[in-house]
Image (cartoon, rainbow, N blue to C red):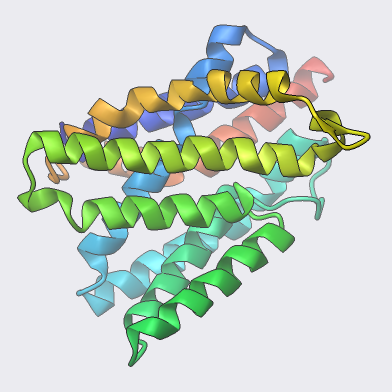
Length: 252
């Protein structure tokens, strides 16, 4: 399974997720949408590892992420909050850009032990600034990078175990983050209500379906035509602006 297939799945699941968010399509669409972020995080981490040794291409990649993050923010705010500019949360590409810049810095630190406090600061900043998936987004990207740096020389069984570990980190982290943000829903007068927490984990365990998908990735980009590369690059802002226009037209 190459990157082209993963990119098609990522775009389709993200579009499904955002359409369901706006138009409440179905519960099935919600489940499909849960697969989107882990796939994009996987592809972003893979792109970083492919480009980090080529300073020229990496500079171009960082610049493209910056432009896409700025352009996407207005449509993201409109889809999420019904306003063209809102500071309550920021789009996912901005978090991806933050990860890439932090990874470039971390890889250049003279001592490896300095990376831990650096990533701790990055995670806290993403959490406080409401970027993408908050702190969980950076943790997931780091887990994806950890997996991708090791999978090439491993057997399929070991890749499967590594992919399972990464997806369990994401699934568990998502539940913990939701409990934190909605603490009063799960903990009332000092009593922890486990049933909704278990339900939250059970519903989000759909992301574990990505374990074999990640393990089957062969590390190849494929050979997509130019139109597909352009589509994938601009799909995030393009689909957000398209959905924004639809909501305006329909009066949502």
